[in-house]
Amino acid sequence: MPHHDLLILGGGSGNTIIGPEHDDWDVAIAEPWDFGGTCMNRGCIPSKMLVHAADVSLAARTGGRLGLRTTAEPADWPAVRDRIFGRIDAIAAGGLAYRESLDNVTVYRHHARFTGERTVDLGGEAVTADRIVLAIGARSAVPPIPGLDAVPYRTSDDVMRVDDLPEHLVILGGGFIALEMAHVFDGLGSRVTIVHRGDRVLRGADGDVRRRLTETYAERLDLRLDTTVDRVDHDDGFHLALSDGSTLDGDQLLVATGRIPNGDRAEVGAGGIDLDDRGYVVTDDRLRTTAEGVWALGDVTNPVQLKHTANDEARIVARQLVDPDDPTTVDRRVVPHAVFGHPQVGSVGATEDDLVAAGRDYVVATRDYAATAYGWAMEDTTGFAKVLADPESRLLLGAHVVGPQAPTLVQQLVQGMAAGLTVDEMATGQLWIHPAMPELLEQALLEL
Image (cartoon, rainbow, N blue to C red; front, side, top):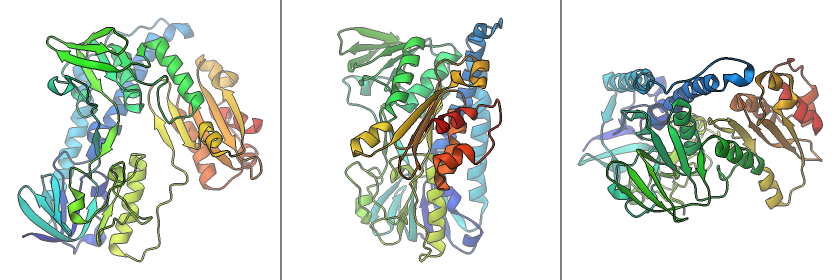
């Protein structure tokens, strides 16, 4: 029975834990998929490379509003796809080869299943360890739609690697994956239909953000709201029977209805590891699970499912492994997130809906891109920045930006929140470059 000082389950953020301090440890990593995890292979990185291509194509398609004579033909999909995965696949293969080359690291290419205390089954072999780190991520949630399990639908795992650019892509869902992939494929030349059970897209976002995105996506593509799918069939293409009595045909179907953590697949309960009522691994503020000597990080334990939080958690776990008395704890007070659709979204902190529900006093200000000099230059008519602050402490409670480079813009407010600056200090305690895009934030803060 193989035994290791440290066993890491997952080759994404979990792989980053290993450092020089572990050179004299017997370390093992179990990763059945490609090294680099979801983010690099089928998530953040390839999707943003596709988003950039779609941005360029869409800019060419809409150049007329700037007086330009530009057009965009449907993309050379194989060239776009192969440019991306030609790089990514090589990095993943290199990461695996590097770990396999280390004398003190064993790589298992199997799914892990707990069979006892710090004991897992890997490809039929029982493996034990003094310490285990759970970093096994999450998977696409697939709704129980009649006929769906019998058709060749796509998820975010494989839709970016399809052989041909879809003529008509049907997307189930209205979250960030649905919005980003809708932008990608519409921008590159596909016809896109989104079928969403809610009345607005992007559940959980600020209400003004949801309204603006719903409006812009409805203008750009076929958006079916308050609609569910009664049945899916497939012969030469996909045939969907919808709840409003209509039917919908497409040559590709993307299921983007959320993601669920993988703790159940690893049967973590057999190892004494508790799950909460949503299936996430339960941890304390040092990311220790309910089982002695087992830590968890990333999407398997954190519902926000963000790569930057997973990387931060990996750093905390790395400290814990070397020094269990290290006092560093998880700090999730200021966690920014973004959606790279069109328009883009960058958010941090509370939404207005959150503050209303909590009965908390606040002041709010909104500033449109069109009211700034660079907004004029871009002829932007949909973007805005919204900031919410405590009227007494003057601390920023939340910020939401919709429009070009929104995730980059909001980072300045993230920094201010993390540093404990008031909105007045953020607005007047520095010089804002004129006529750069950050003036949008300055003007919104000054309105508070």
